[in-house]
Length: 459
Image (cartoon, rainbow, N blue to C red):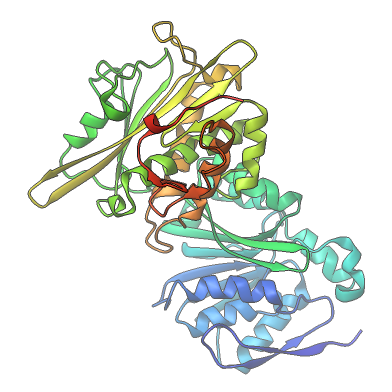
């Protein structure tokens, strides 16, 4: 088998030529997608990156040209030779590009010698029937890179590999590995967010970002308190993501001043959000938080995450979960219909100090004092302690302003919310057709801002 030469033009850089030995994956549309995401991180300024599965070296070389110091690895020895050779052709040396054989799941000495700020991985997604295009050795090498769960395990055992504020970028397809990726990382307590997509024929490719949620914020667990929202509002020097939860809340409150009575062993918690988050509107913040709860329940129901694709809402509808706009989750079972979860966003301004606080109350069991209530015990067996880290990660996934990727796309919240509430609209179901950019319900008569203006039914 003969090698080939490929032209490669990374985002914003000059075109170069890459030598591609047999069995080595050449740059394609997926490479361009991941490169565009890396380019949007701007100049590396000496920051460090690890590329897993470097292939021809296209992504690693481009990152070095943007000022990153890169460690690259691949299980295919011909890929190692190609990356080193292609890097030398453009004048890069080992001071900026270190190349090692191996990868997650491999015993080889592939790990970077220092912590990195970004880990980039174009995951194996090409099906085995592509042998004519790639060759059997290349296909075997792609599979041999290992699954993303192996990287998750490595980062758990060696957290210093990813620096504080670091990001894992993985490109996946709509195959089984891709479908399970975000669910498994979220269950392990990592925030996950889709940040770029493209479609190639019947294949949908997505770059998902994973990070440790609100990494430098404090987490407090109280035996009891008046209100977790008040605990946050009364704190001095708290930063975005500061989280307080309690086993017993004496004076909990809900939307529009209503009281909130939580079930025994339920989730009662509050987060400090960025003071800029209110620019998206209180309704939006409440709905994004509601999607975080839908994601959390989906993790333990072994379903896809609604925030990653609204089509996963259908699995929640099948078990009786509905959203009552703008901030309630209700559950219908064979015996009763009741409110499962409530969300409340509050703000306080004192001089130049602005605090935006999110409170979530989620019942583990139905509440005796509340006629229309439900508990997650009707759906899943997990305890509060098992749910809390996943809820924390899910809130960050939707609402954290990460320094490398900024805010979540509005559609990640609005599409799943509308999908999960559309079956519960009664009198205006033929008129409701979406949500505005701040979460208001759009109808032929304008934007409705009060749930009292129409009737809800639970189909």
